[in-house]
Length: 285
Image (cartoon, rainbow, N blue to C red; front, top):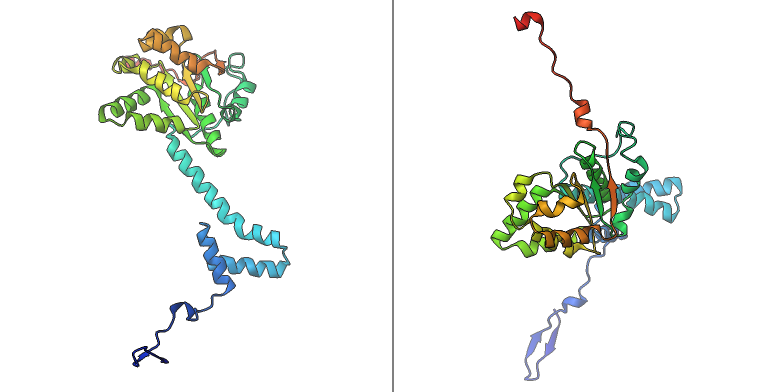
C-alpha cells in the first residue's frame, strides 16, 4: 500500500478511495433484467434468452422483439388486476348477459337498451342508472352484468344490496369509521345498489337510512356513477325511507341526468318453477 507524508514528518498509509475501486462489470443481459424488475415486469432470464433466440432465428424487428418479450407478462399483469377488481366488487354472482332470455318478456325488457347499458358508456359520462320493475325480471343480473363489464374496462366497482349497505353504514357509524367509509364509497367508479326497497324490515331497523343515502349520493353526484335496481315506483320512496325531505333530496341527486330503465312482464323465476308432482292414488290411500 502506498504511503504519504504527514506534515509532522510521520509517514501514514494511504487509504484507498472506494469510489475509485473498479466495480465488476455487468453484462447488458443483467442490466436488462434489472430494468425489467424495476418496472415491475415478471420475466425470467430463461424467457429473455428464449425471446433473444427467437429474434435471431426469425429475424424479428426491434418492435416485434419487444412485443414478443413484453406481451405475455403484460397480459398476466392485466389479468391479475382484473381479478383484483372483481374480488373488490363483491358481486353476489359473476354473470353476463350471455344466454339471457330476451324473448320471454320481449315487450317489457328492451334488449337494445340493456345491451347499450352494458357498454358502460354511462360510467364514462358519470351518469346514474335506475332499473325499475317488479321482482323476477332479471334486474340483479343486468346490474351485475354491467358491473362485470365495467371491471373488464378497468373501472373500480362495488356491488351491495340496499340492506347490506345500510348495515355497513350503521356499523361504521357505531365504530367511528363512517367518514372513512363514505370517502371510500365516494371514490368507486360504479356503485351498484340492488334490491332497494325490497326489505322493509331491514329499513325499519336502520332509522337513519335517509341520511345515509343522501350523504352517499351527495358525495358521488357528478363525480361517479351509481346504478340502482328497485321494485318501487318513485312515489313510494319517501314512505320507505321515512323522511320525506331527505328522501326527496336523495331522489333528486340520483335522478338528475340519470338513465331510467323501466321493466315489465312476468317473473322468470316463477316461470322456471316446476309444479309439485301429484301424488298417485296409491300414495293418497
